[in-house]
Amino acid sequence: MKYSKLFSKTNKTAPADADCINAKYLVQGGFVDQEMAGVYTWLPFGLRVLHKVENIVREEMNVLDAQEIFMPCLQPREYWETTKRWDSVDILFKIKSQTEKDYALGATHEEVVTPLAQKFIQSYKDLPFATYQINTKFRDELRAKSGVLRGREFRMKDMYSFHTNLEDLNEFYARALQSYLKVFSRCGLQVKAVEASGGIFTQNQSHEFQALTSAGEDLIIACEKCEFGQNSEVATLNEGDKCPKCGGVLNKVKGIEVGNIFNLGTKYTDAFDVNFTDENGEQKKVLMGCYGIGTSRLVGAIVETFSDDKGIIWPKSVAPFQIHLVSLGSKDATVVEQVNSTASSLHDELESAGIEVLWDDRSDISAGAKFADVDLIGIPLRLVVSEKTLRENSVEWKERNSAEAKLILSVDVIESIKSFLRS
Ligand code: ATP
Ligand code: MG
Image (cartoon, rainbow, N blue to C red; front, top):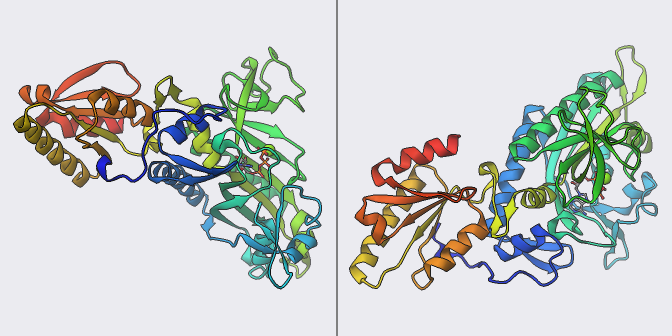
């Protein structure tokens, strides 16, 4: 992609009201635009990152054999009355139609997925199954804050599983927990599965997934060795104690909740009266689990974790592009032409090799300003074509997380990039 064709731009100055790193760099780097508090447009760069994160989530949910669907955000009041949540869930956005009908905007989707599943469940032969979606959620958060970490409109992957018995539900729950850890580690994050209870959507066992970063709003007691953690509000263990799982030392750390899983038991199937006929012809209640990942919050948590004073440092797996190619100007028009044609063929060659490249081809921007943008945007590898590199039949190679720049022979560039991206 050519930078000169982008309609969205980076900003020289950070937004005045930015209260944390992601609010600052995601806006400044042209990843998102704030429409109002807690509501964002995802611009081309940001949407590429969000899609990468969501595809990692999608791949891991598919490994669990969960089937992807897409549910409505406009939900009838009656469903929320059925679960007695119309009046009790304070963050529910409620709207009225011109014929005075009441609707909720989806804050979560148990009210849609449970009656949906009911239509397809008759006997034990129809169970178990799991289904998920990646969709927008609406929550009337009193205080939207911390950039994309706490929005009023945000993205979530929510999965729901349906079972005949607790053993089967527990087995799926344990596999989902492992899939979650895989998702977060593929995003480059260090995440603890924290035993949790309480909260508006829970009944039985649940785990929160906490990404460890100083920007987190939750305090947790976490093992320095394994994935174990406890929320400090409910913790039975203290800092300095031994981890009950592996014997490692427990520390008090801050985390961002990037996911949450619940054993719902029969809470929603009782409300909607969802039954199945077992092997003996008896009617029984279906058991449910639900499993959420805040995909837009996850993008914010990645930025909070990977940045420096110049900008973002994306992990390769979720970077908006893999290569940031920069062509530099010259006073000599022939040199400019040579630099541009070399950069242009490299850009085309990379694209046809399936490598995602952003080419800063702008002619009226100084080298310093282009390099500042490279650091702000945070793509893992910067390649420079200039009068100097042409003389050496090379391109300049600099990784975002290293200070060192070196020359690589032009003939070796594609192979070097491929091995860099594999590493
Ligand atoms: P929190 O404790 O942060 O308020 P929650 O426990 O209410 O979140 P869930 O209902 O379990 O959240 O939603 C699943 C996931 O969706 C959360 O783990 C989080 O990553 C994300 N999420 C929840 N609320 C928001 C929000 N307002 N903005 C962005 N992401 C959110
Ligand atoms: Mg929570």
